[in-house]
Amino acid sequence: MGKIRLSDRFRNLLVQLIKFGMAGLPSFLVAIPLNWLLVEQAGLSKPLAYMITLFFQVTVNFILLRIFVFKGSSEEAVIRTYFKFLWGIAFFRLLDWGLYTILVEHTKIYYLLVQIGNVVIFSLAKFFYSKKIMEK
Image (cartoon, rainbow, N blue to C red; front, top):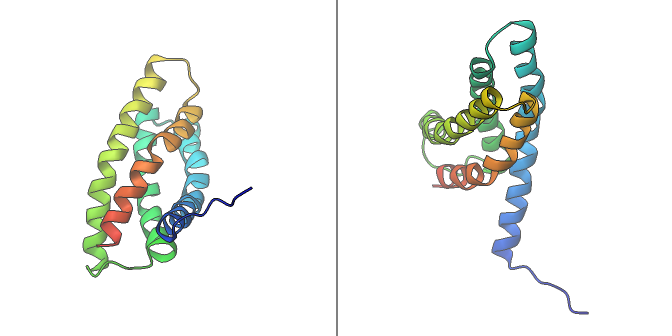
């Protein structure tokens, strides 16, 4: 049997994608209990609690991506890159939040399950956007 050889470019992209997922894991693991805490203990509406949770995730993800995945490869100032990242990711998060709100308000799907599903749905698009912004 022959070996499947991946091009260096594809291999590097795959490694970067895996690192992207790993860098997002800490904020994701905090986001689930944070969302639960805001809904169940603080009494916030599910859409508002999720919006707060998403902002937290975006900020933590930027820091971790900059340190571990894209390693500050952008020549732009960190603050400027953060705001580009924030506004671009906000578009994906708005879609994420909209889908979440529709599903939790109009179906009987458990809200934390919807949150996990949205991570899967939007991760690849966020990876390629993040790569574009941080590797300029």
